[in-house]
Image 1 (cartoon, rainbow, N blue to C red):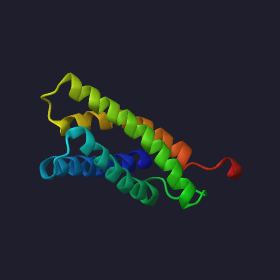
Image 2: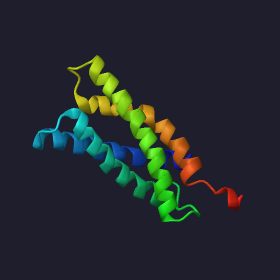
Image 3: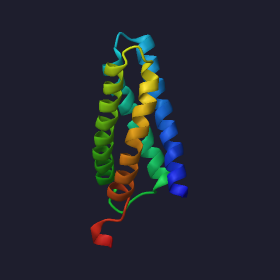
Length: 129
């Protein structure tokens, strides 16, 4: 249960990073909500990798490079799912505030990423079982 709670807290920080970077880019640059979101997702993924590695799951026995690559793979798949849901919401409801669409899409991707990170990234390797 501690892991789920820590993951939720890290996810909250990731959401704030994602939504904050998105809002900042929308306000301060000519980027639209779709291209700005790609940069916001990348920033959030970097923040959550370090927090999940440090506080939620701990380091695996794979080493930083392999762990980072696996995290990136799961993170990219979760981000694609997140972006697809975000895009579908904005296309279906164009007047909706983009940050609200981020919140909804993030909840959908959260379950996918928890399972991937806990089993594929930070779980014990086959050699250590």
